[in-house]
Amino acid sequence: MARGDVVFAPDGERIELVDIGTELILDHPLVRVWDVALEAGGRHSWHLHGNPYVVLSVVGSTGRMDWLDGSPSREISEYSGGAVFRPVSPVHRLTNTGDAFYRNRLVELKHLGELVPTGPVDVGAGARSVHGVRPPGAADPGDGRVPILADAHVRVWTVTLAGGDTVHVDRIDVPHVVAECDGELEGAALLSSVRVAERGDLDLENTAAHPRMWFIIALDYLKEDAR
Figure (spheres, rainbow, N blue to C red):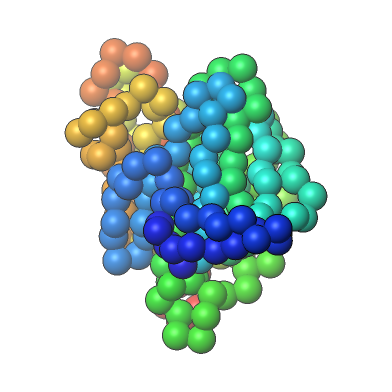
């Protein structure tokens, strides 16, 4: 189901679904990436996730997820530079319950969902990063990447570079998504801030005078021996 499809609440209310995000940034054969931006108190209306997905928190806040089927609401708290890996989920809406702007990049994983002939892959409960805590079993790559989330299906790192610095990441053995963590990007700068890289080395360069951060998502479910 997608934008414009109609569902009904338990009380019979007619609900027209909206897009998963507020703006589509990238539609690639492997992933679809959305920008989700909410002012304080803002709400992203009823929508449905048909693909497992990764949320990259660019500007953190607290929030509440309400479920159309009447299940208990879920209170969430996301911090800038954090990540969440989630399975497909029923129709829900998201409210920014904080007192400041909230923004994330939401990455749909097509080969775990819509491109699987038998239906979405059961990825379990998913995973969530914890601020300042290295995920259990995640090694330090020693090349500037900081591991923040580790799951059998995806790994997520952040890389922070001072102005003018560069970093070289030796061979990443799976396709990976690279997304800049900057809550002020708009227009062409926003659209160019996310890309998909094939297996191999990765070079990042900060051409600005101020520090910048990037997320790197390794799509481990695409390992050749896992197909």
